Length: 616
Image (cartoon, rainbow, N blue to C red; front, side, top):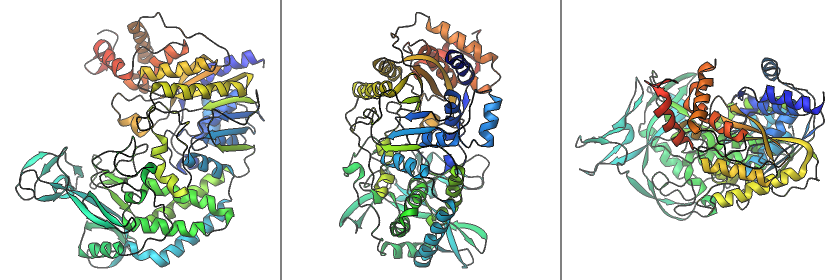
């Protein structure tokens, strides 16, 4: 097929409807990473844009999913084959090669480790042996008794902050004042257990406590947290109850137990103290200046014990064991693990940390690290099985894509996912994990909006522009680049277009990447956008121009298309904004409205009684 005809087919098929990118599967679940795109979805893009033996590049590689996707092209899953058939994508399966650059110490480590295709069985045996040794020495950390005094194992415990009444100055735990069970509910009201005054919970002063931090050798002041409820199992029977004296006695014993010397005694972001970065919050981060402050003593000992044995393991399995520990560490082992109240549930539901932030709730959860890591063994082993016998040469480099070691015109296709302005400060969000790995992000070339780093729109644009100039240098004359992007800010979209122009790229077409489940900030942030833009670039300079179209006329056209669509997702305000943005990006034109302004216009002119309409 001539290139022009193939390009037209690719544009029509790949960019004609939202491309699904489900957030599941062994490779996706092997290790959490902010704004991660499933490698199976990227593989569909690679197989649609290239032929076997092509070389693919990703300059903002994240956790290495583009490299994994290149390997999957030689070994497509049944789901990939079904999706390609259903969407009539012009795929050609077969091995591809990939070069991926990533600044992050965590992301580059994940990509390098998985792409080295460790042996699943050797990993499983090594991980099980480590847990067996840890249980023999530290299994007592998670001892617990049921209501009848029978010995059992702690599954997890809920801790609670304490609130100081503004009126009588007495302390009441958040659990006592605001949590009810059967059905589970967390109230936004605080009721003092002593004087009975009831007020909004938000803004109530938290009780603080001072303790001697033996790891730092000085006193620390932090929010007071006490054990509220314990969940365990005895002989296969699960149970839960309020904390009792035996639980508190065990916590006291643990406080006197030395931590194995295999943990990072590191100030946060290399600074420590207060206001250590963009993610610092004066309330729940009070007294949290070092990495170990994010852990209970119990879980710090457990993680350090596992880490010590990993460091002593054979080199052939050491990195995949480190990935295994990291996969559970930040997500489930810290004070950032939490509970939520779901409608219709009798009890609170445990969940992981909130990705992309360092949030500690008023009801942090302490999970059994050894049990959690045991469950993770199967997930990691399944991910490794996905890559067994996969063909292709991939290279993951820890470095900046503004300066690569690649020859001129050596790349056939680019798939990349640059940082979305100030959406997530990756170097901060990854810091805890990187501290345990001993691999840190060089923040100097990090393309991001960051007050802590002193980077505004100008600095962000300079770094993005340098990256796209380098992309142009290494891409073959007829190569194309697919860029995934998302922002609620019109100014950030303008910055992206400026970077395209600086790199001598033109927009050929665009689409929406449907992640099915957005990142935490995409779901919860005010004026959020759901569905990333998928932008196809070609190597030809196209002057940026402003659209002469009336904004309301553009919005009317988008609403009309949405009302005709079979997919109900097209009717959501977030998807409509994504369509609005890509309409302008297609024309190499700056989107005139940010998300907040767009939603106001939408409500004013196209929403009646909560329904989308053209007849308001």
